[in-house]
Structures are given as structure tokens and as C-alpha cells.
Image 1 (cartoon, rainbow, N blue to C red):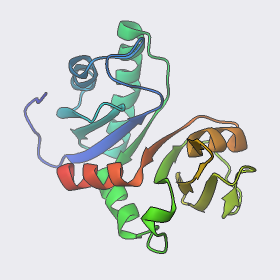
Image 2: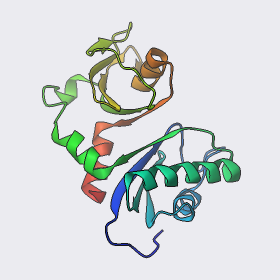
Image 3: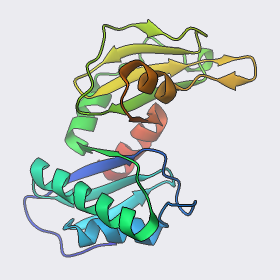
Image 4: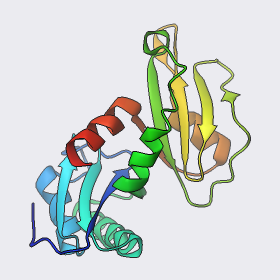
Length: 187
């Protein structure tokens, strides 16, 4: 969904926790994109079906305001109460350029992940490992956790569950390959 584009705008990505398009208390693609346009985004595009939206606006503060208004609209329209986190595509590009998983052999882990953390998170020193050894947090940035999950028995570890328990705050996680695909398409 697109409104007229404005000069000086930048792209942002909003990452919702626990949102899958069309599920109970979740919007469909049209509702999700429309919420961002109505909140003031120049344009908005849902990426995949996991609650990731790329939108354009003029500044970081406007991006935060748009996300706040879009979340309020989605709560009223669909009953969605989950948090979401916003990052500029420029910041995500810088994160990807760090190549944080360079030393990881992809075939030796279940998934390489990036988790977007609540602003109030106080992170411990990394690396950290879950008791089951199915999640390893390799690195924390100021606002993200970079981790790998391993399959132990029949189920893989959940970096999101591990981080939420560790930090006592909500987070949302995407696979590293999803982040790279997002940047390839929208960056």
C-alpha cells in the first residue's frame, strides 16, 4: 500500500511479536499495511506473514510515533496486544555488515537468529547458553541479541523464550536469513 512518497524519507522495519497474518487477534495483510498508512507512513509493505512491516517516513521519532499509532489501531481493529520494535533499514544494514555469524557453520546449527529487545532490557555479558544447550546467545548490541538455536531431541531451542525469561521483558525474534532477505528486497 503506497501513499505519495516524500523527499528525505527513510525506510524502517517494524517487527511484531507473536503476529501471524490472518490468525485470531491478528490483522490480515491489508489491515496491517493500512494501519501504518493511517498512522502517517508514506508507504507500508508487509514482509512475509510473520508480522514484519517495512514503511517509509522522515525520521526516527516519526517512525516510533507511527508504530505506536499503528499498534493502537490494530488493537482496536483486531485485538492485537503484542509489542513491536522498530529499526531503520540503515541500522539493520549496519548490523548485517558486522557479519556476526561468520564463524558459524550454518549446517551445524538449527537456526541463526536476531532478536529485537525491549528498550528497558539490561543485557548480561555474552556468550550465554540455555540449560538445555539448545540456545546460545553469541552477542548483544544495544538493542538486539544475536543467537543460534540447536535441535536437541525432537525440538529446536527458542531464542525468544530464552531471552524473555532471562530479561523478564518481551522480545521478538527473526531468523538471520529473513533479515538478509528483507534487506535484499527493501534495503
